[in-house]
Amino acid sequence: MTFWGPDFDALQAADPEIAGVVTDELARLRSGLQLIASENFTSPAVLAALGSTLSNKYAEGYPGKRYYGGCEVVDVAEQIGIDRAKELFGADHANLQPHSGASANIAVYGAFMQPGDTVLAMSLPHGGHLTHGTKVSFSGKWFNAVHYGVAQGSEHIDYDQMRDLAREHKPKMIIAGGSAIPRLIDFAAFREVADEVGAVFMVDAAHFIGLVAGKAIPSPVPYADVVTFTTHKVLRGPRGGALVCKAEHAAKLDKAVFPMMQGGPLMHAVAAKAVNFKECMSADYQAYTRQVIANAQALTESLAAEGMRPVTGGTDTHLALLDLQGIGVSGRDAEARCDRAGIVLNKNAIPYDPQPASVASGVRVGTPAVTTQGMTEGDMKEIGSLIGRAVRDEDGSAAEEVRRGVDALVQAHPAYPRA
Ligand code: DSN
Image 1 (spheres, rainbow, N blue to C red):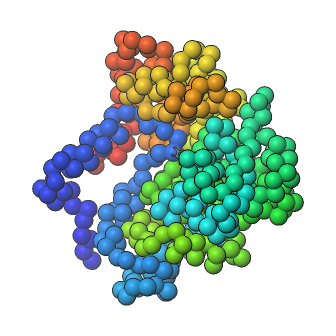
Image 2 (cartoon, helix red, strand yellow; image 1 turned 30 degrees about the horizontal axis):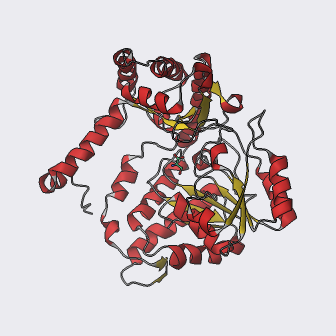
Image 3 (cartoon, rainbow, N blue to C red; image 1 turned 45 degrees about the horizontal axis):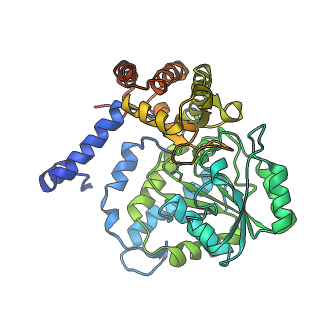
């Protein structure tokens, strides 16, 4: 059997400029500490599926029911992927065609809501997501969005507020999940409120679905009508989206993904998602997810020792949110100062942040990528101390020394090690 591509020599010959970008990006990934909580290093097997000729095929529809001929081969990939997703997550139904997490979310709105209907979701500045009803997104422009947040003292989700808002506004849909929530979510509490007010309960599990796949944290699948996610975060698959749902919603959601919101699926990405789900069924992957959490907890402790206050006091997941007000550094400055020393993280609003989002009082860190590199708790202690030095380094005089510390870590634990 012949595999055609990925052929880097062909890219270099045809387009040296873009070939240079590809190699520069690999060099950047290898040379720094990647602490963006939503990023990871996907496997060579997933990359091979992504770089395959499956990219050529139009396959509008679903396995066995396509609008094009010649789909009998890609049908196999999609059906295997669907079956694996159902097994991995214990779900009745899966759809692997959403191009991204946002696309999966759009489909859920399309399936259950009419323009003007009310959605209740976590506010973005408290850890939610753009597609959960913010004014700049379709979700806030076309729907009436009401937001719950975290309680001011504990910084945990304010379930009483969520229940009160649901009773007052009778939303058509309630969303749990977001992009900066360090703690486990009480899905049973959401289900109870959704049942009380007759709402659909959606979980946007993009951030933590990989931890669920690895059985390191509890699953939302038994509680939610539909769970949307991305496949490239802790899960470590290709960049893309997916959803799983209860059997009663399967036909509606499939129709909302295609033809309501999307056209032809990206069959190379669908196949890569199938490869990823197989990887996630292994004992190695489960151990990886436990280590991701242990690393996040160790990194959080180390950052706290450097004067950065963990929002909620810690983390149960792969990410932590740090309040930098105590050390008098903005999130924006911290991000820039870390970047110059080879530490990649992002500024992030903290709950009740006095700063605008473009400045922010906090940073978000995550351990999916460094854990894929094989780093453990001792390395996290060192990373915390390097970040502590970098964020206080106003004039850049310590950047070189911090970068030497980063170099030592990434040389001991290389990303995409050379054969
Ligand atoms: N952009 C993603 C993140 O970084 O969390 C969420 O969509």
